[in-house]
Image (cartoon, rainbow, N blue to C red; front, side, top):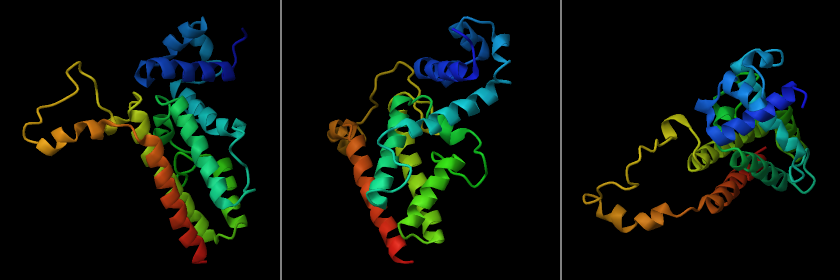
Length: 220
């Protein structure tokens, strides 16, 4: 198969999905593609450029998600719910890649992950303004929406093995429990604490966010 930039980026995403970001090197990626590492540099100047391309590919992949709308057609709440779930689908499809969206430098310093593409921010702001948001309320909505998504999704992908820096817990092979003799309540409720309610919590927090944004809109 012919080598090109898109194929290299897709292979990098696949590699990180399987091996994790710390394992990615240009040499190993070349081996995955059946070429020498030097052959990759014709299409990507280096690893930093490759990682930026990986982020761009993930962010723009939402354009192919049929559930995500480019403009509101059923109200702004429906528009944002679809967008939020589109971002979450990307995060859960590529949990080990998703932290790059938070850590790579954006196109401009005022862009915020995970909606860090100028194209997506343009659609977001235009969508809200077309639904009656003032400029200030639309910008405040963008900030709140970004913070909500990033906080929830980084925590969620961490449970799927993503390396998210301080949030990541390294498995050293020890048992998955500690001495809880000094924490009887935690010990009693440990099973409940271990239950996975990520999807429900995401929905509830998203509903709360939309209610706060409705107040922003109403304050125009």
